[in-house]
Amino acid sequence: MFFVCAAVFGVQAIVVALTMNRLNSRRGHWLNLIPLGVVDAVFLILMVGPAHVDLAGGLSGPVIWLLAAIASTIAQRRAPVSI
Image (cartoon, rainbow, N blue to C red; front, side):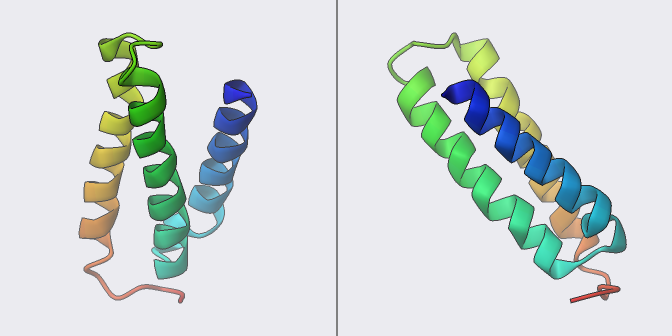
């Protein structure tokens, strides 16, 4: 089940990034930021917290999400090309 969830959200993130985020779309920014942030937070609580996944492996996804969230938020400071 985890694989299916990771694959679906991974594909969603890639499609939104290629179609909306490269145009600096605010909607694309939020479509990736919120769902992927929630999934990463739940993953930390349910998988890393009880030690089903090791800490180093479990933190890699949320750290990448955090860096991407910071970078895309900085990019959003410019006027978006689309809404």
